[in-house]
Image 1 (cartoon, rainbow, N blue to C red):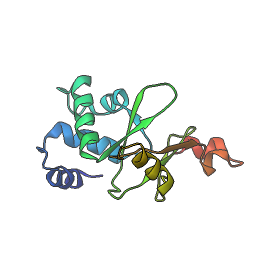
Image 2 (cartoon, rainbow, N blue to C red):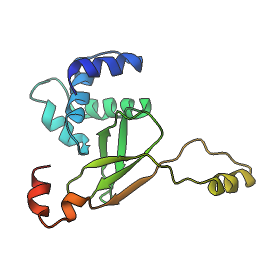
Image 3 (cartoon, helix red, strand yellow):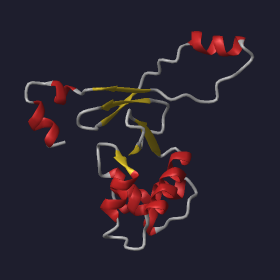
Length: 150
């Protein structure tokens, strides 16, 4: 993702276009895998010397709330982030080996689940589905070479 694409996204979200926001978006937008806030900070602090880790967290949280960055959940309980430009309703497959994130277009939340919630007097406001596993490139016969180049 170049800076112009980042500007367009921020403008669409009605967020102020700042160099720090653009750097965070560019960093995540140029990776097909998820990163921690610390990894984002390590990659951009040389270009934006005045940025601190708390600022990176704040920007990431703003962009998660705006729906342009997805939070990725892992067993180590750290927070990871992935810039997802797919604005339609979808879920993600996350490779535990190479950290790639792929869109899943199908939603598995069926009518039965919605009916169960409605019968209890509630209503669904949102849901998150993340499927973790090992992608085909990582589980294939040449897994070490393909994962290291990812």
